Amino acid sequence: MTTTNPDVPMVEMQGVHKWYGHTHVLRGIDLTVPKGTVCTVLGPSGSGKSTALRCINQLEEIGAGRIRVDGVLMGYREGVRNGIPTLFRLHPQQIALQRANVGMVFQRFNLFPHMTALGNVVEAQVQVLGRSKDEAHQRAVFQLERVGLGDRMDHYPAQLSGGQQQRVAIARALAMDPELMLFDEPTSALDPELVGEVLSVMRDLAGTGMTMIVVTHEIGFAREVADQVVFMAEGVVVERGTPDEVLSHPREARTQDFLSKVL
View (tube, rainbow, N blue to C red):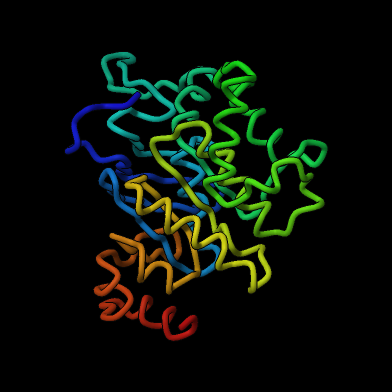
């Protein structure tokens, strides 16, 4: 799936719409995220931020538009029916292969409670990528040490703090060697004193050049780490720009109102 052209965006959303029944959640989203950059997405609850992430990862099927990751059309192939250009949905197995290139970390940690931290990081590698248990074990140890959990590998989720569980979830995603990492409010379920340890891991990851899209309410993180800040409301992108442009000098009234409430 990887292309060698650095000029091809890692993520390109073009006119993306999403409906849940009669509810129009995404209303024509356009977003470009260059390779090696960090894009943070801000906005009030219900603005469509998490849905946009789930559409990128094909956990949700879009209603209209196109999403490309590293130049590859996600979830569909282009074709012609009755002389009309048409998108055809890929087989679920093909979509799963595409999804393997995109790591995602959720609000809730989604760890297997009956497996240790190490087991959680090993399992997806074996089941999805078909790696041997020895190779998966080596990669799991490396990633758990990378997120500061080298001394917690044999602990079960119930024996770990929320921050530690989220770091296991990050290690699990990284062990799949993704081209892109999506974070859906990764600190929202954590006690305030545990937020810092997860954000620290994410800062370190951003420093390696990993392309990241982060839905978050952590304005300080967005200001410090993001290359691009996107503000969404009511299913549209209201404003985008550098952290200084959006967070310090917002042009749109909806952005100004939101920031006045969260800062």
